[in-house]
Amino acid sequence: MAIPRKTILIILAFFAIYVIWGSTYLLNKIAVAELPPFFLASVRFIVAGILIVVISKFMKLKLAVTKKQLINCVFAGFLFLVYGNGVFVWALKYLDSGFAALEASTQPLFVLLLMRLIDNKKMKTNSLIGIVLGVIGMYILVSQKELVTQEGTLLGMFMILTCVLSWSYGSVFVSKADLPANYFVSTAYQMLSAGILLLITSFILGETWISPLQWSFSVKWSMVLLSVFGSVVAFTSFNYLLKMVSPEKVTTSAYVNPIIAIILGWYILDEAITLQTIIAAIVLLTGVYFITTKRKIKIRPFGR
Image (cartoon, rainbow, N blue to C red; front, side):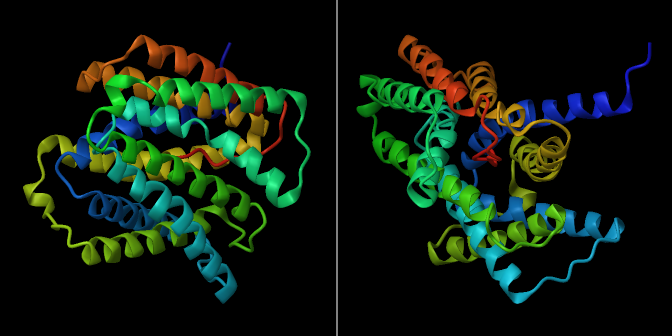
């Protein structure tokens, strides 16, 4: 019996937000080993933004936006991609990709807290349980002695948490902001504006801009995969799933991505997995499950 086309597309879309987005932590870790972080992020999003504009033109989508929509796109791009992603990539210089992914998995917790503070939205019992488990899991994760004694690790952990906060506020902001009706067009403006801001940041910080001709083979492939698959394919899949399945099913990527990142980091980069990290992962991801299950919050997955 033939599988319906819709079912196949949904399966492929879930593969994209689970595996492709889960692999972006590893790809960023590989690329940042050779390229300055803000330069790396700027190239990724400028390329991705141009690709989306080309696709939008091919689909005959209207690219015209109002002044307010453009300002909101730039602000959203800053929250998601300039600070949320650019600083995150910088922090990967000091942390393993799997560890960083676990920290990023706390995003639903931050979104929930922000909605409580900003909208005074009441929390359900399962959400409160999730928050408690999330706090406990994060404490177990960051209290490892072998981590806190390494130079730059504490700063990296703190900065990633601020990135998660930035991305979480961006999710709340976008849910209310006046943005282009078509998500593809909105994404194009966010990525292009963020890419330009990241390039300016890179210039101000005095980063060395390295020609693609000088990149190693592994970095070239990482950048291609990040730009095409991590930014364009996975994000499109995410928006497709929000229309085809319930939002709480889409947000399951928040606790699948870290598992993918930990496995890939261990297998490809020989990143160590301690017993304490495993325990923290179980507690954290259980907390995220309690927060996301049976809740209809559209959370844009973090750190992609």
